[in-house]
Amino acid sequence: MSRAASRRNPTRIQRAKTEAILGAALDVFSAHGFRGATLDQIAEAAGLSKPNLLYYFASKEEVHRALLERQLDDWLEPLRRIDPNGDPETEIRAYVRRKIGMARDFPRESRLFANEVLQGAPHIADVLAGPLRALVDEKAAALRAWAAEGRIAPVDPRHLIFSIWAATQHYADFDVQVRAVLGGDDPARFDEARAFLEHLFANALRP
Amino acid sequence: MSRAASRRNPTRIQRAKTEAILGAALDVFSAHGFRGATLDQIAEAAGLSKPNLLYYFASKEEVHRALLERQLDDWLEPLRRIDPNGDPETEIRAYVRRKIGMARDFPRESRLFANEVLQGAPHIADVLAGPLRALVDEKAAALRAWAAEGRIAPVDPRHLIFSIWAATQHYADFDVQVRAVLGGDDPARFDEARAFLEHLFANALRP
DNA sequence: TGTCTACTTGACCAAGCGGTCAAAACCGGA
DNA sequence: TCCGGTTTTGACCGCTTGGTCAAGTAGACA
Image 1 (cartoon, chains in turn brown, red, cyan, yellow):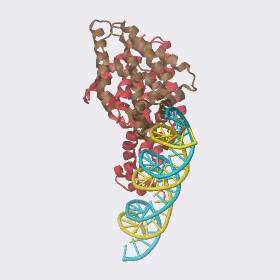
Image 2 (cartoon, rainbow over the protein chains, first blue to last red):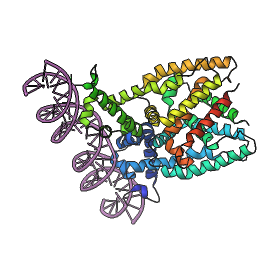
Image 3 (cartoon, rainbow over the protein chains, first blue to last red):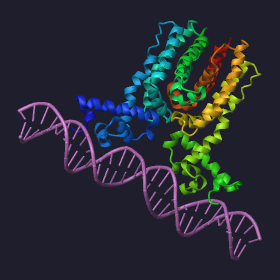
Image 4 (cartoon, chains in turn orange, green, yellow, red):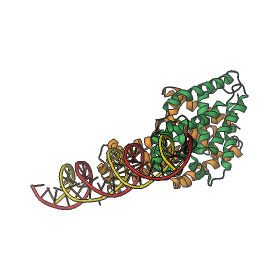
């Protein structure tokens, strides 16, 4: 068996190397997109040679696929944590906080998915139409129930979710633009954004 | 003079060809990003040969630059049209409508800029820090004046503008995801989005 | 009609790219 | 110490890509 990645019991070396590769790949893919990234860049960032990288992953696509797969669950976790039994305003404020926190702490992950979706999501189309859609539908039902009980304003819950995604991820995906407009890169922008967005969504949703 | 693009009085042919090239470039660059686009794709879409394309534009970068430049004014027009002397809620609702309309009618332009900014805005960094920032500052001052007069809630106007950008452009830039989640591509999604976003921003800003 | 210029093209080039391969180096266990 | 498998690498390949160039074709205008 020559292809390390397909082993059942990876050795310590294999785990360390694949980890290094995926870490480097996150850097490179998020910064340049799939097409713009090169195996040489990833290999160098990971501290090994290109053939060596290809010993662990069969192809560039394979690295990309593995990376997206590994990040997906973490990426959707904030939405998953919305509690249908919680207080609507508290839950939505907390969701906004979690998302703006991810934009601050995991901008590379955000840009990785932004690049992928912008290019038409060629590698995760099935995820969008499957698990993602199911999760959104589930949470949308909860929001609709809140609306039916008169606990939030009667808005389209799916567009509400889109807005929260868009407004929060904006601070990661379009960071250069945000910094250019604000002038400088004072990290306080994330707190300002959090305050504004909490206000925006809480106020708009009060019944 | 061999380089057509640098002529002062472009002939009919020159105008038609450069127009065709920029139109094709908008298609290709918006779909694949700068790095992902190829001159052959653009040339074929424009209906001419690659060397012929390079007769009109000196390089791939030059095509991209000209394209961005030509689109920039139109792209910022909706923001420019916010009237400091108008009624706050009316103005903001109208701005949201204009922006969601652009996402519906000019998704390629939106994705062109999204790609550029996502890659770190290497070709328009000066525009962001210059004209864009100036325009935002100008409109932010108007919004701040409204807030001082108690006509809208006292929010950070720049983050308000970011939110409107993000929430509206989302429907162009992440269209695949939106369609996957909503299921199908019913154009009614733009009307739903417009209704939701008008509600969102109008309600949140009422003093 | 001829002539000058604008336009167009096929053939070509060098660099960069993803990927292959055979051989070498490494390493744990007997 | 030798042995078998794992890991690493330099050299290489074929393809794509941005860009060049010399030679040709087509228009404008006298």
